[in-house]
Amino acid sequence: MLAPSRIDRTITLVVLAVLVAGVYMVLAPFLSAIAWAAVLVAATWPVFHWMVRREGRPAFAATVMTILILTVVVAPFVIVGSTLAENANRLAEFARGVIARGPPEPPQWLHGIPLVGERVVAYWTSLTTDTSGVMEELRRFVDPLRAFAFKAGAVVGEGLFQLTLSVFIAFFFYRDGQAIIARVRGAVSRIAPLRGQHMLEVAGATTRAVVYGILGTALAQGVLMAIGLYIVGFKAAPLLGLATFFLSPVPIGPPLVWIPCGLYLVFGLDQTAWGVFLLLWGALVVSSVDNFIKPMIISRGSDLPFVLVMLGVFGGVVAFGFIGVFLGPVLLALGFALIKEWAAPHAGASAEEDDGLAP
Image (cartoon, rainbow, N blue to C red; front, side, top):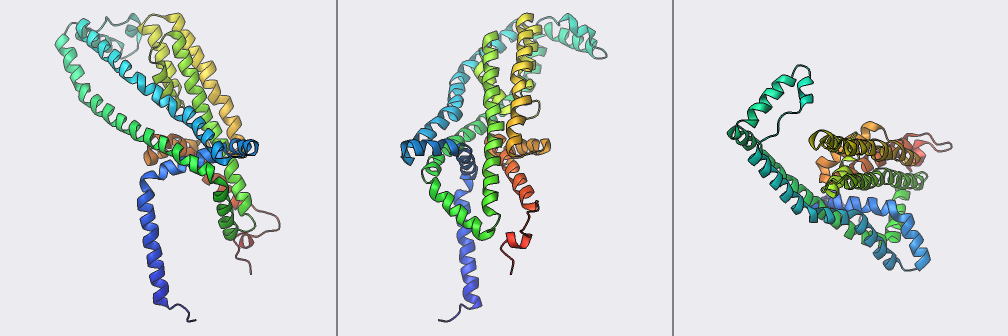
C-alpha cells in the first residue's frame, strides 16, 4: 500500500479544517448555552449519579434533574416577567402623578450638604414652580431611557432563551453523560497519560465549588432580598430580588439594591423604622451570605483571586450576555485551577512524561 503523498495529506487537512470551521459556524450561536449546560451538569452530577444508583433509570433521573433545574433557574424569570407589566403600569402612574402635582418641596437635610446643597435646593425650587421646566427636564431623559429599556429587554429575552436552551441541552448531557465522560477520559489519557485523570478531577471539583459559591450565593441573596422587601411592603420585591440575583457576583452588588431602597423609605416616604429595618436586613442578612458562605464554599475547590471574579463577571457579560455573569467566573476559575495544577511539580513525573513526550 502506497504511503499518502504530501498533496493527499494537505487535502485531508484542508477538508478537516473546513469541516471544523463549518461545525463552529453552526454551533456558534449556541456556544454559551452549551457551555452553561455543561457547567450545570458538572455541578449537579453527584446528585444525578445518586438518583441513577437509586432508580436505575438514567432517562428518568435526567428528566427529574432537568425539571429541578428548570424550576430553580428559569422559573424565577417567568415569575418576575409576569409582574413586569404591573410594575411598569405602576411606575407610569407614579410619573404622571409627579408631573401633575409637580415635584415636592426640597427636604430640609438637603440644605446642610456642604458646597452643593444650596445650589441643589435652588434648582429643585425652580422646578417646583415651573411645570414647563419639569417637562423639559423629563424630555431629556425619555428617549435615552426608552432606548435603554428596549435594549435591556432584548438582552434579557435573548438571555432567557439561552438559559432555557441550556436546560434543554443539559437533559441530553445527563442522559448520555457516562458515554461522554468515557470519551473525554480517553481523549485526556492520550494527551496527558499520567496527569490527565487528576486534571479532570480538579476541573470537576473547581466547577462545583465555584457554581455552588457564586450561583448558590446569588440565589440565596436574591430570595432573602425579596423577602426583606416584601416585609417592608415593596410591591416590586420580586423584580428587585432578581436584580440582587444578577448583581450578587459583582463586588458590592447587592448593596446597590438595599441601600437605595432603605434610604427611599427613610427620606422619601418618611418610614424611618422600616427603612432602618431594611438597611439592617441588607447588611446583616443579605450581605452576610456573600461575606461568609461564598468564600467558604469556593475555597474548597479553588483559590480564585478577587480580580478574576470581577473580570469573569464583566468579561462574561460582554462575551455571553447576562448568562455570562455566572459563566465567566466559572470558566476563569476552571482555567486558573488547571493552569496552577499543571504547573505544580509532581514527584516522580517530569513535564515530558506528563505530556507523553518521554522517549
